[in-house]
Every structure is written in C-alpha cells, then in structure tokens.
Length: 353
Image 1 (cartoon, rainbow, N blue to C red):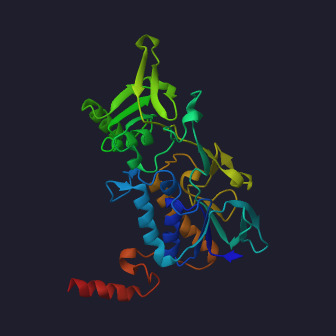
Image 2: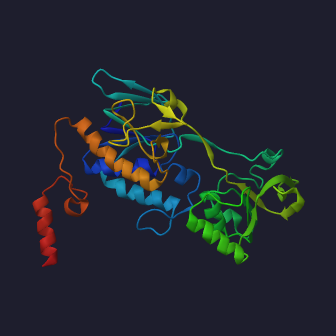
Image 3: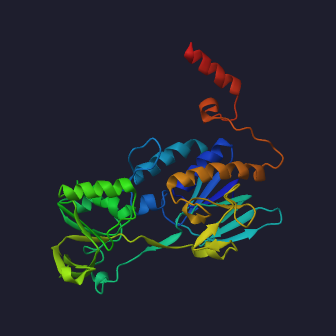
C-alpha cells in the first residue's frame, strides 16, 4: 500500500503543478497516470507544439513546459505510479481513500485529486471512406515530431487552435502548408487567426475555407487529396500531398472514474468552484480540463490556479484544526518554506546593504 497526503490522478501540467503547490504546504504527493511518462498530452501527443498562454513565456513547446515543471517539483520528491490506470475508489472507516489501479497497485490518502485532463481519448476522425487505409501512411491525427514534415507537402484540416497553431508552425518546416476548414470563421485565438490570415496573404499558407477534404488517393502511401466546397458550383480541388492531418479534436472519456459516483455533466466532473474545486464526494477534488462549472475556461493557466486554491483546502482536511499562514515564496523560499521568516528577511536586508 502506497501512502501519501495527496493522491493525484493525472500527470499532465495541472497534476504536476499540484505537486509544487502541495510541496509548499509540506504535503507529500503521489501521482498515478496511465501513460508511461509524466506530461500527459503535452508529452504523448504534441511535445513539439508551441504554447502561447503560459505567463512569462511568449512561446514554449509543450515538451519543454513539462520538463520545466518536472524540474520545479524535484525538491518535493513526488512518487509516481506510471503506466497504470486508476480503476476503483474506496473509502475506509478513517475517512481516507484507497485507489487501486488496473494492475492492482493500491494507494491510500486522505485527499484524492483528479487532474486527468480530458481523461482517456480517441481522435475524432473525418468521415472519409478509405481514411483507415492511409493511417501511418500519410494520415495522422496528431503531430509528435514536426521534423517528419520537413520539406513535405502537408494538408491540415480543422478550425480550432491546434489546426491554426500547427499550420503557422509548419510554415518554417514543410515545403507547402494547406489548411482546410468547413467554415469561413475559425474558432481559435484571434491572434492565431490573424497570423494565419497574414501568412496566407504572403503565400506561406494555402487557405481553403467553406470546404472539406473528401477523398484520398495513393498506392502504398497517400499521394493526393480532393477538396470539395460547400458551394457545389466551385467544383473540386485536387492536391498532391505527402501528409494529411485532420485535427478535429479528441473524443474524451472519463473511463473507470466515471463510475466512482461523481456528479458528471457532459463528460466532465462538476465541482464547487466558488470555494475549493471539491466534487460531490468530500475529500475528492477535480481540477484542470476534467472539471466543469459555470464560466469554466479549459486553459493550462486555469488548471494551475485551481491547483493552488485546492491545495489550501486539502491542507485543512489533512491537518484538521491546524492553522496555516500563507507565505510568499519570495520570502520563505522553496527548500525551507516553513523555516524562519526572520532569517529570510535578514538575508534580504543584507543583500540590499
């Protein structure tokens, strides 16, 4: 039985940052994740995808964000159970929980935090008859290594942030970048939309709007796609390509967590965002993309905020009746966060002369 203060389910950015916030409170943490390494989707699906909304980083690759988070939490020595999926949740007589994985590993903690992102997921595939024939032969549903597309002709499909961001990024990698979207308006961040439009004017992105990729051609590998327009009078466009990447998002599934008795709404876990991000089960919290509440923003930044707030309330559960006085890290430091505040102030005064 692995014992800890806070058991975190999900090793994505939000789960990893929870380790940091808990560590500041001198709380031990352990993480369970079905993937074989930390980082969640940032490591497994798009490690080379640029992220633009992390404070103090105008741009950072998803893989580098995970690397930085792992470095940040190193002083707190979290435990990891990787390559195993959290299966069951049981409550003991003392009020603590036991979470057992699909491989039988048991974990005990007074607080459980679900930070599983979108949960388990499958890519949404386009309704093209022979799309399965070209999977791994020119058709992919995510980009792990952009160097695969170096000097290649690439067609992306989609209207969200992922399609826009990758189209922009690949202009410096691929020989030809085409972006196909079934509508005229894009759903992504305004800055990305404007940047893609500017690159289209410069001829670096070929934009096909109010259109869809409907046919794929090739022998052993993908060789061409046919684009059909919403307006039949516009006919069809035949493009020779090396790669077709439909980025229509992921179809999320909560998996076994969905049977734990949690209140679910649209495949997400309802939480009390007015206070502590606790679920309908006392002692079980949900943070990051896996939760839902009025006004929810599915951003990594939001997950970081929720982790910080949640840990303050988890401290009260783990240490009932014990008052914690929050100190800024600029004063208390990291290694000795519960050390002498007077000593820290003395060092600051000496450094200022």
